Amino acid sequence: MSATSHETAGEPGQSLRAVDNDPYTHWHSDYTATLPQQLSIDLGAKQRIAGIRYMPRQDGGTNGRVKQYEVLVSTNGTTWTKVAEGSFPADRTEFIAPFEPTTARHLALRILSEHGKANRYAAVAELDTVRAR
Image (cartoon, rainbow, N blue to C red):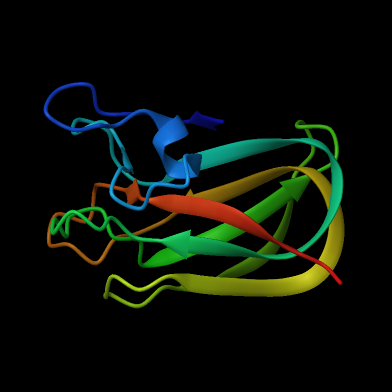
């Protein structure tokens, strides 16, 4: 798991918190960074996936809730292909962003904008794959 940045002061910002299966922790981008931001996951082996599950921060905070996004996949971590783009709602519910089933070892969520007024932060409580059937 990696991120283009993470906050170290006052926020539990480490990128691993976006994949710890605890919706009450979250990754938060560095307060001094700007969008776009990106979270990348090495799945460990090639997998057939058909979407992502995204959960916004659940701690009551609203800054960093992802609005516009892109999903990228890669088999080697170097060459990336965009498989989805769209907008997440502004609420706290989990959202599934489906795409055509594809084989990938690496997955990235690129955050292009947020619902907050600053439009410079990114925060993710949980990020996971949807396996293809």
